[in-house]
Image (cartoon, rainbow, N blue to C red):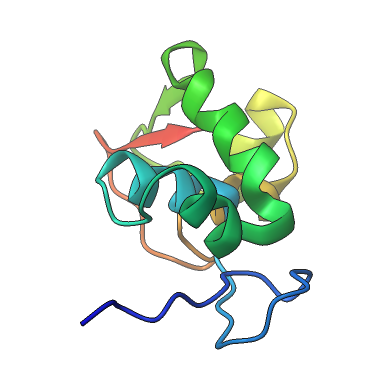
Length: 107
């Protein structure tokens, strides 16, 4: 029996259940093989498709930051010159999430 496809984002014109995830989290799911291939993936990702594929295609050029003792999302975002909310979301976290020295963030 075929698995029913549902869209990931609310901007898709297709009906089905919808989830809210960051583009980075969706790219990780694609790389892990969880979101099918080709046109099925396009259907699932809807209007997120191009952004997610862009992350996948440029994954080797992604910049990373290794968390140091005393860091917070706010201090890291300030050091890197990025938006704190985007930094947290792209790493699948909230700005209040616990982070630990040695962890790596993608920005």
